[in-house]
Image (tube, rainbow, N blue to C red):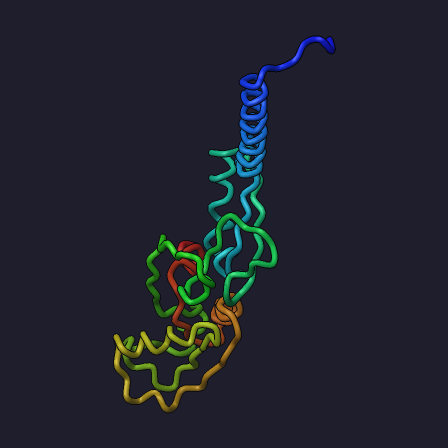
Length: 194
């Protein structure tokens, strides 16, 4: 730089403002780049939901978006902020830990059992479950309560009850002929079709 060339007062002011604006523009570009879609979609959801609803639909998603890498983590209870995620899926709105829930599925349930169980203990009516084995899901204790509100049965004291922690275990127990279970349709849809 030639020592005889100097900025005027207006030039110095312009240089300071231009430098600040260019720095802000560079920072804004960094922030936009950091928030730009990376090609990875991280989904945090419940294990049974992942197994019986999400996994059967991932092949179609991969066909539509081959550039997309899907990372699925499963957990129960409230949404965990221990690792980053793009989408968190839970059934209970209380599990969203301050996030705004957006409903996207409506759940309906039905009574299911294996053919083997049904042959050994015929079912006369949906409200007469006397002497049937009921499979309860500890994580979904609302399912049998809702069933009995739709099909009142005052004579269910003779039922043997098997209680399991999770829905996927109850699905397996029903498949193995251990009893009747009230199950969300979206978790047994594939089984019923086959």
